[in-house]
Length: 206
Image (tube, rainbow, N blue to C red):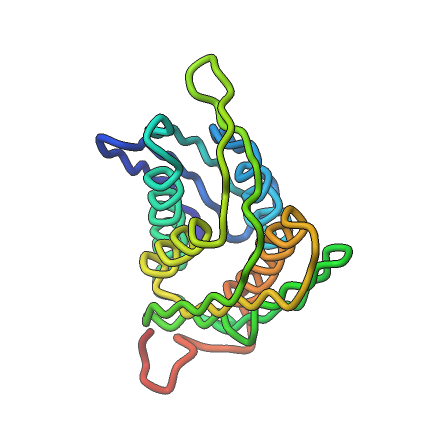
């Protein structure tokens, strides 16, 4: 059973995750930044992962702590759920359009045990809202903040990931295309291939 449950708790954030790699794309997301909560829902849906995610953090400071720690927790969850990585496809690739936007996760998810991240994406800041207590506050999400999330995810998951945003006009569409493409590519890489035996590496380990 490729499932895991974990909690990452610091003085800045508290994140709980349940993950099933062999799910149906179902998710329950309780995230104080609804826009990112929507992105995680899309990620799980298109990767066919069952994901439960509940998080809170010091948004009165800024987005950074919560976004980075979510990447760390989610990456660790994938690493645990993959276990010994027996019979996995290992590699994944997706090219995904979102209306006028086109995101490509180039040949580039490799569940290798060697973290590496390349991010070629530029877009205008996206105005988003966050729940701070009983108050909704305006915040801005930019490409560098997404980079922090993905770098943290890659580091803890132990994967190689390359994200290229080819084109687009609408910032929301650009970000959505990236998360959908990531879900698709990671779903491919995590999939079990019954024709394979053991670890998919001539080294004998990943």
